Length: 429
Image 1 (spheres, rainbow, N blue to C red):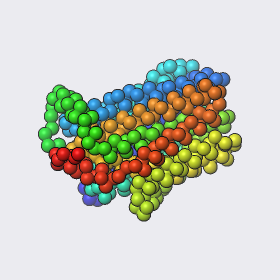
Image 2: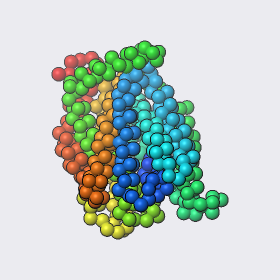
Image 3: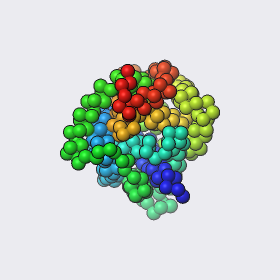
Image 4: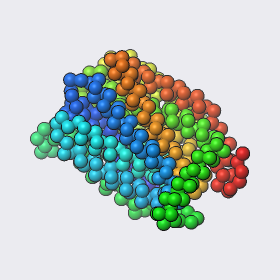
């Protein structure tokens, strides 16, 4: 195996590692367990509001830190150090969910928020390592490989966790509640262990002048101020981030709240879990296939089609009445989810000036997380205000429409030219 392939595979394994959290915890068992065990099972409207609020608070916390941490990491050559810190913070907090007793919804949300901050914080620095792994023409492939491995890895562990939940006696577990708590522990172990290849085999990108941490903090703050000013020069990045901010909000909201939606509409937990497994195993080949699709029609067009797919799913979700409808929508999400995430990341990587990857991916993740503040709260608020979960779901449609509009305005050839001139120190006006 060549050194480049080894680096790419080791980097991609982090998607395999941390997707266990996004699948088993965020999308799977936490929403179900929160409603049925930790919160009030007789008040689905209130538990929807509480979970939406928790997801939004976690996003606000990491969004506030993201660009500042990214600037420090660039100056101090510390991308991997920050990734390791946030990763294992998430691992420890996920372990803590095992200790939460029935009815302790406040404690459950506190640990969930802290684990989510660890998950999202580590992703800032994980994403920022990608441009140093391979040349520009391989970015779509590298990003798609990461998401594909994430779907299969997260899906395999989730399958085991589902079997633990449905048949606890097979594993020597006393009851379903204990099985779910043990599934949280399994996520923590999986996440921590499969992060090791990245730690060992992905090098820290070289910077021209690496600084000690105290000096990097000061230099990072000054660089961040400069970047705010330069965003006005890098106009294409600004338009892309606006588009991304809107449409990825809809995607993240569906990922985080879809099980809660189905549960609130009265679907059985087993059906919801089956739908999640469908998404994972359909998304694995689809993420790779969507990379091929993008190579034929263009990456930007492929993302616009994926946004259209999500918009259609949101509209159809308003009308769903039975589990077969839910399964159909899960299959549609699986077709588009890996593509829209992977190709958005690689599109942005093309626009980022060299040497400023963590800083600009900090902005990328900041806007993505600030967007994730709007979606869950909007859905929760509309549901609470109208008493109608379907209207809460439908409110997400506007985010996809607006995101597609702004993405259609992005000229990526111009963006790459501006990034090159910015890296070389030229005036990009």
